[in-house]
Image (cartoon, rainbow, N blue to C red; front, side, top):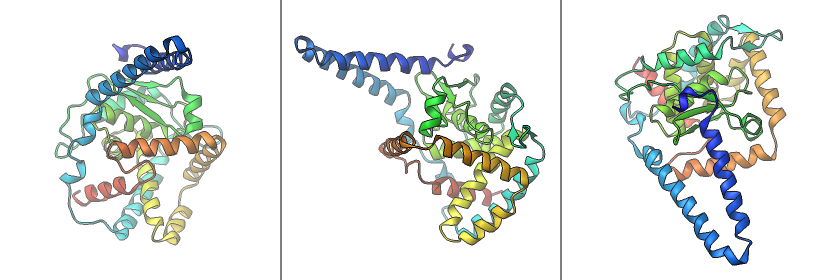
Length: 301
């Protein structure tokens, strides 16, 4: 039902819940109905939390994907080898995509990209992903895109409506991977870093150059962040070898992030980090899990 509508039912649902909460809080200031209003507010919050746990929360406790791979620890040397490989892949894929008049990567058609995401889900490696791909790929641009840009939110999955929302104002280098990430939640992967990895697999198993470029660029940047902790000179040298098109894309990303940086961005980064940790996750500031599972996966290929 939700997938057939052009707008996000989940966004509308959250607006409605927000209005109900605001109304309930205002009623708390009325002495004659304070106790009754407080009880109603607690009932709403408890019901919302209970439904969330039933529909989604339990998925945080499923067996981690990394348990299906090698137990041998990864090394920076492995990450270096893989980063060189992904640099060449990104340079190659960058040549296959379109640019705008400023020479920055530009997606041609979001609808085609969404169809490709669904198709690529069918080709995920069976030894890692046993879950059935979704028959209806409900990807929606969020109506909260302005707020999302200033809070650092690229997208979110609504477990109540099974919709994957994305921020349509994002740079196009972010967008395909963000959509793949959110569609991974539709497959039942609740943890953010696991959704990153499944999103990466979707991109890797796609024939769409835009999706592959965005996905491989995310993998490359994650590897470089991991390597930077031990060898900044290597990272800088690799960045110097980025193609001119890649450098323009990354400059556009940097300008976008700087334009939207501020108090809200910092505040939501902290609160999101606390939320992730409350759901048995490492938090939004770590890239180690994705890098680890990526390297271990590549060992077997």
